[in-house]
Length: 135
Length: 322
Image 1 (cartoon, each protein chain N blue to C red):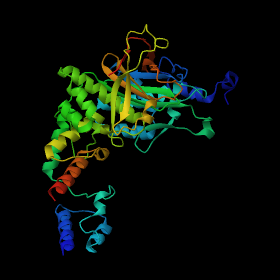
Image 2: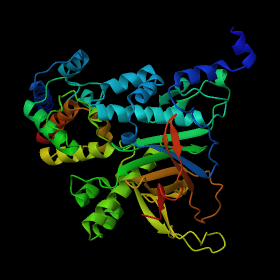
Image 3: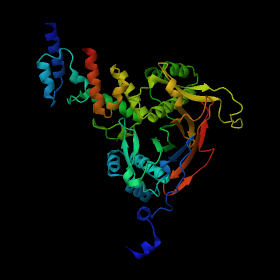
Image 4: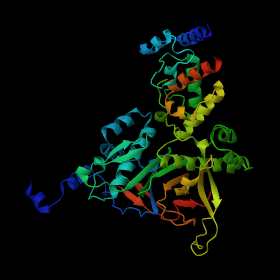
């Protein structure tokens, strides 16, 4: 019983955002109940939930990036903006990550920092970590 | 074939090379490879490169991939830095003409699994590969390329005046080791502390880049970089060299397993008066015993194809210890 409810809770939590994915194999695993409350697919970087992170999150990330890189107001900053294309070096990226950690109360492992190359990727990771924290 | 050409016996690749750069006053000045205990450091000051036609010439030597990357960079200043960085690498390596005259645009590069650029060499076309190792770093106002022979190298630059947005000790607690936090916390003057932080960051970056790994693959909290006073050995030390102290910069693993780490040599410099530069090189172990012999660094300022400058003792000042 416990296993069933745990599975359904996790499943629901993942459906909460607008859920667009081509990874149907993940859904099959979940419906078989094999995954319990562990969804290996979540851990692989191959499986990317391409749902839109909350706009609020994206905006906060943009604000932190703008401040760190001292971007002039006219610089166009979109979710797809690559930090390196905006002139961020490795120290800037780490400072940005630290700013995000403080803002959202999360902890980003150093190993993940290579996956944060755009505003969108940062926002997606934040959402994932915040959800994990609240789960 | 043009009879003039045949009689002049000019190799075709040289002609092509010179034709592309007819507008420049000189070709690349060739140099000898550094010795095994030496590092060459070439640097460009982007603000001193102003000619639009020169920048146009530079674009021509890039690969299609490199041109594409630069087209994605936002803003003219950043595009120029990205262009100059690629040009510096290509022209620097081409100077070391180990296999006859090398056209910088013919060089091929690849990245290792962590993204570190390496020279890709086709032995069938060009004979055995040159034993060159290189690494590049840049800020908005300086671009540098370090070159060694037979030793992996990592370099990092930071502007001396760079401001840290986060609290320095908080940052160090989050990303550095306990020893380094203690060291930074013990510095009472904020400005000195900030400078020490920058130097430490460049050294740590240079180390992970020399290893070919980068920040994500080798978190900064797993190793400490610090100064170690080496014992005085009057016979081998250059006592007339008053600019370096007894301090040697060393790296140690946090878990105490430091046996492999004695092979990494660090040099910390002030470059062009505006930057701290850290160089990390794997020593080949032929430097005997535990006598600390600072590695020789030869720094040259360049505007590729236009001019090279060498001001020993002024443009690159080695800072003894951290």
